[in-house]
Length: 315
Figure 1 (cartoon, rainbow, N blue to C red):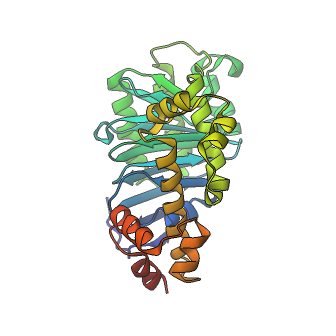
Figure 2: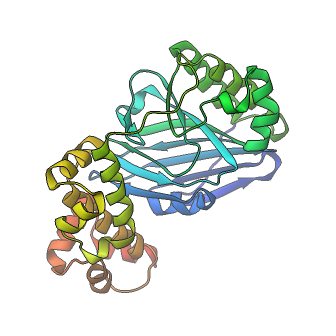
């Protein structure tokens, strides 16, 4: 595979193969690079991010690999016309997708609306996303079933380890193939793994009530974290007791609701500092940090640098 040089934080287009690549240390850059997928990232644990993203595009198909070096939560809402299927590589460790914990080799189906994934260590995955019409016309007839009989829902599908491993190998190879061959070969790879799933097509089970409540609160905090909602308000949004909400957050992402609120505020402040506009004091106040010394200390522990360093680096 050819190697392409690129500065950190800069995207690179390779017109002849329809490929794009990004190497970055900022979640905000990843979100902008994938703007059409409407993604948001929240860093969950202290440390410096090292991220890589490689994407190859063909007619009606996109294949990509994303590697993240630090614990985070990703939330996305891709267009309804796209059907993404992914394999999380084994060295990624524990993860939870839409309230479901990985149990053995599983195919991730990020279809049918908004999804989220949280992971405690690192994440490395490969994904193929087909246009819905391409899937219906090219993949469904090969599977020998009616489209309505397929389980095309958000969730995890159990797969045979050997078939999921082969699927990952084929997606890796396709990342380096000419764009004109991606649709045919991508459909072939996807059909094989869908046909070999260990369970019949069925609706994915709903996550536990307390996890559903935690996810409602997370969505709320994406919009209103800077208003510093108290626990009573969060419980009202979740529709459950403080204890149940606490368990829901622990089961979902391994932190308490209050700690997640602080993480959203820290990540939000970092995103604003990276724009290079405004002062540290103004941005801290905007995200509800009233004591600048304490804010600077918490920020440095989480991101490995002072807020002023982030701001200087952006200007």
